[in-house]
Structure formats: C-alpha cells, structure tokens
Length: 190
Image 1: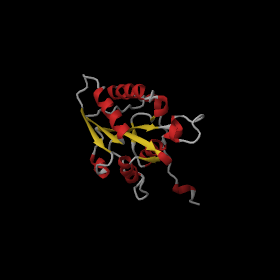
Image 2: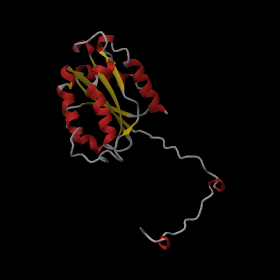
Image 3: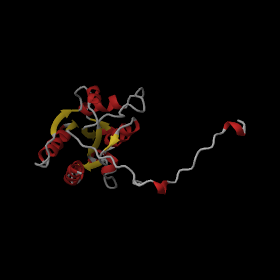
Image 4: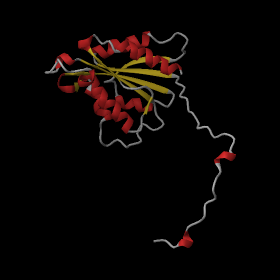
C-alpha cells in the first residue's frame, strides 16, 4: 500500500460557480450519405430511400452494393452517414452481396476502435419469415439476424449509431419500410 504522504490533496471544485453547467451537445452535420445495399430487395429499398430524400437537403446521396470492396468504407470520415440495408435469406445468412460486407466487419482481428472518428451508421434489415419453419409465431425480429449482427458489430468496433436499427418482414408486406425511411430522413434533418 502507498503511504499516506504519497497522496496529494485535490482541491474541491464548486460547480455552482461556473456559469455554463449545461452538458455539451454535439450535432453531426453530414455532407454525404452512402446507401449500401446487400440483396435485390435491399437494392429496391435503397432506391426508395434515395428517392424520398427531402428536396431542401443539399447532400451528396449515392448508392453502393455491399459487395463493392467494403474495406474502402473505412475511408469515409465523420461527415458521412452510411445506411446499410442488409437482407437475411435462408438459414439466417446474408445474400451473396451482403455476405462480403458482413464478413469484412465481423473479422475478429479488427480493433475495438476501428470506426472511431469514421462514418456514422444506420442499419435496416429485410427478412422473410416465410422462410422459417414456425411461421405462425415469428416476427420481423426472427428473420433479420444479419442486420442485427451488423448493427451490434458496428457499434462494438467503435461505430457511431446515428439511427436505431430497423427491421422488416416480407411476409407482412414490408410495412415497416416507409415509417423507417421517414424517421431516417427526419433524423438527418435535425
């Protein structure tokens, strides 16, 4: 144990004396939105997202396949928001396009701060509970494992989640897509 003499007295700070005691709020301003899609259905929803961009937002919005060299996504800075649209197909796996991106981000060799000071992200999952054995009691949560995994993995490697995870089920007509897109653009406008 260290002796009592080795401890230094730290002066008490009276926080009431400071004029500005409000916490700082950091607002992300994006110059670019990249919509990354993995799967045919995801590509369709990606086009919907781009087409519903509010006209008054002057942002560079572009589409990209999830299979297109995912390592280059790390070149995107904090002024970029990447919206991942990941489709889950049979056996809780991603589509061929989405698998490339999923495998890249799931590498165990990535450091915990890989995405620190990089892009912000949002993830939306597209699944089909018709592919599951027990169709009577399943929901969108049960058929969107890939989106759930990607969302939690991006956060685990230091990513900044801009918008909450969205999930949808093709069996119920993808009714969750429209409200999520509206919420996504609303969060960008703030």
